[in-house]
Length: 626
Image (cartoon, rainbow, N blue to C red; front, side, top):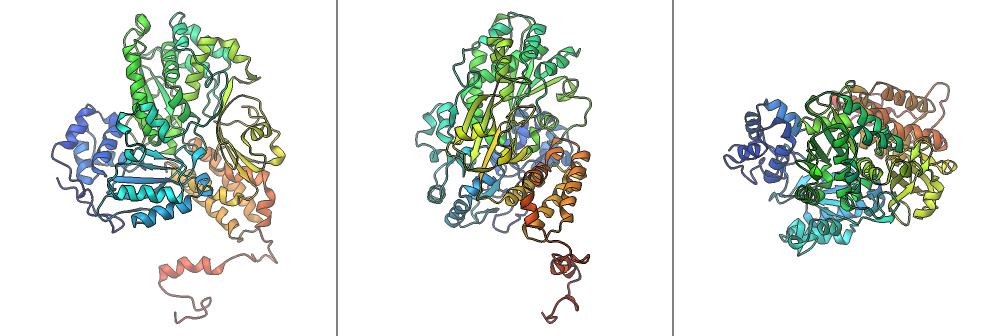
């Protein structure tokens, strides 16, 4: 098969020439997924895994097998960062480029990999063996710097350990052998915890303390669907992903739809930098999660479920598949669950492929449908018309786990924990400049100061609450409460001490949003680029006081006109630091003198024109002969 496509960096061989695609191989992959266009992401992931790229001829064949056009297939293949139209090495090393990783020594780790492998970031070795690249947050901020080596996760890297990893790979060691020489004999759970520490620092009464097995599900089959929804409503449970929509109300809307099919989807795509709480629940409470999804299915009458697992957590797929299979054997999934007539429900895992936007509800559904992860226009809302046009309940991992515990212990038990309007416990994933990064399960209502004392972060000068899309607060706000009505958060708490550069952090977060915008709407696609350029202007000391107004105006426009939550929250790093760290911006601005901008850089301004015209300026270039 001709896969012809040239490499981009001049280092690799011709596209996919490293591993030629045998005749019939692509057709076999498509057939395994029923030639179903809605399983396009699964098909493309497998092609990528086997042949290190998705070549033009491969896309033609996938299109033919699934009844799509080549353009439709390429639209999906080019959307996700873990899929590539250029050849990758047989082993791809993805270094986590989160700001926490940078502060934890990423630069030295990168240098060690580059030196040992003989390639730079973004390159593939000449023999097609190894690719080295950066990737945004992979959910390991409590043990940074971290990296993915194909499906294997490595944490707490140092320059020394990075060099050893690179040398082992060059010597022919498999990625899984980097974890253990006995990798094949370990259980899926043992494999997961050998790669990644759970770092559970404080176990609360609801999720991380002792949990009886399937007590919630047993209760659910003994009462009606309406009674289940009433219990969830009375408990005060709200979505734990950040938006905080009332869970029981969402379930009631979905249950009210008259339809032959409906779906329950678990959003396990926590991509907010600094968030890793669902990672721990997926590792330590997978049965509780599936139990919660099954209860939701009984409440709304769904027979089909999807667990959408972010691509960065692929190391947990085997563990979750094992749990699903075990529950099928025990009659907790499948036909007539717990012997209950007409209570049929099963779940499949949908792997993501590296796209932050897929944490957004509509984009996640698009991804499950085999489309690029672009948000859907609302209304209709997913509870009315979601996956494949049918009513769909989407909740995240923590929310489903809470639901199972509420059915077990009762609505009042849960309602009495926390504060008015914020009931139950919350999992906080804490990282950054603190002594004890990790997971803390606490009732809602603790102040930021109280949390900092627990985690050993008393030297904090700034705290990012809720990740980049949340708010960065200063010490004068540390008395505020971690609740939906004060400082709402999906769980991420990132601590920064007084040695950190606030504008550098903001610059990084804006670059993250620029990278992760799906590109559908102009305000988000273009506005975030301009916002980041404006921040860079401040960092270079080229800003005027008027530029502060520009930041506010542009941020407001992006928020007002963007299509989905990404654009509506992406200016938050700028706005929250403008509000809470005004002196940082003031210190970096220069006043105008007589209407002339003293900080205007004429050389930078005309540099673009020089390149276009391919000649220098008689007026501004002193040495015109160069």
